[in-house]
Image 1: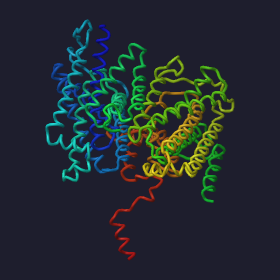
Image 2 (image 1 turned 120 degrees about the vertical axis):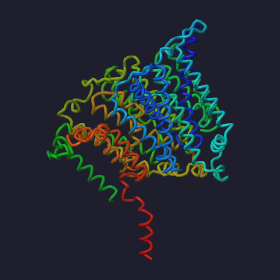
Image 3 (image 1 turned 180 degrees about the vertical axis):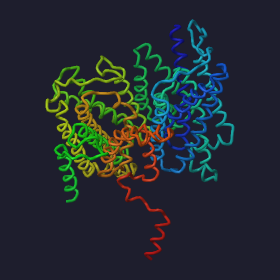
Image 4 (image 1 turned 90 degrees about the horizontal axis):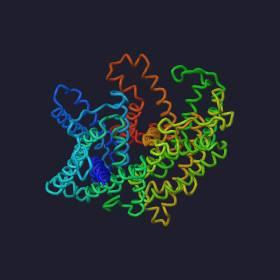
Length: 293
Length: 347
């Protein structure tokens, strides 16, 4: 029983990270029809910004050092993401294939650049002790970082939903996802919303960068690329462009991966996620939420 | 006439390379007929063929697959496993590899083509990722895990083994590239080939004309995958072992780079892109460690040490400024002012 609880919470924690990565991907795709391949590279940049700031602040005690580094990482990914939209995606407006290609090139170039600067070796992240300590629930000892991941993802989900439902910009984004031509016809400049969703995606991925660095306790140049593939799967299973669907799919993928890795055999979790994707596409080619594919 | 003569002339010229003792300083490390140079040239040719097989999907049919690496890796791994782990002979192993490649391409193609566009790209990526995970996890100790494994060379044809036989490997690679070229030319000018290009331009219209795009897309997918599998076997002969590098998603992405840098949907573009890419990937490393570069300030020389950084940036520049690829650079639209000037003058 306690193992099951531990697996469930860990799976939810993993799903929380997938959600944080996938939510940006899903929003960007929903609004702009661009699958951002550089999203994994943004994650790597965030993780390295986090690690780099931590090493520069080693005179501080752990909590302020950790939190400051987290803020820097999030600011860096948000700014970088918005910048990429402005400089590289916008000039190719309306040419979807080219936009995807540019993000592919960017992903490879950034990974190579990070390798060139900091080398291929994994770097160790310092995290506050509290995150590594365990809380006992129904007999299971659960590391506190799992709770942090789940809590943060839930906050981000509610925050994003509130933003999309309650604010004017959120309204424009939602309308744009549904029918971009109509929004443009009403005289609203959708392109501002493009930069905005990229910034939001960057923000979420920055948070994911911090949490995943703590989860794996190291960063390396392949950090983002490894995670983003599962985020892609989450986006497709959840139905491209749907936030709720993405959240649902992230939970399913995280849980399936954990259970299969433990109860079947190690490594089978990743495979069963891929099988799940095949299954979902056979039964519901539009993804779980059925909004778009 | 030109369509046959020029490729044939190039083929004949390339076939004589192992007999030439010409030294090209800076271009290659040693004379053309040395094993090192021949090995690099053979690798270029294999990737030229592989890139063209990818272009059949991407450039000619308009299918953006992110899982092409899987079929190449099948060629490398299944053949290597059959010979080394099951102790099969060379030809039975090749036959088994072709069979596995074919069945897998039909099955996975049939599933992934149920979706289109970006979703198709994602699904092919996921299937390829499954293959990559298998290769890394080393099931039954077959794949050798992260390091891969060397093939049992007793099972290889003796005339392909050993450094003295590099010229034979070069000819095999040349034969592979030439076959892919001929097959792709033949396929895209056949009547299904015309349908592929029509699907790329406007799939809905093909459907309205009463054809089933699904079947045609599957044909293109299976043919491209089989050509990639064949390339995998040639690559195995060339390197003498299987490594996980060929299974990864980045491997497919580099194929995309080759095709786009060279030019999509053209006779030569993808192939030239593949050759140039591999050549640059290997030689840029030497260039970066040369004294000319290492004397530069570190913020310039550090990025130059990673060929993939340079190639990634080149790729982005190509997408922005030469969207049809480097081989089509003469067709780039001239700046509008120039055009207007010309129009005004010709009036």
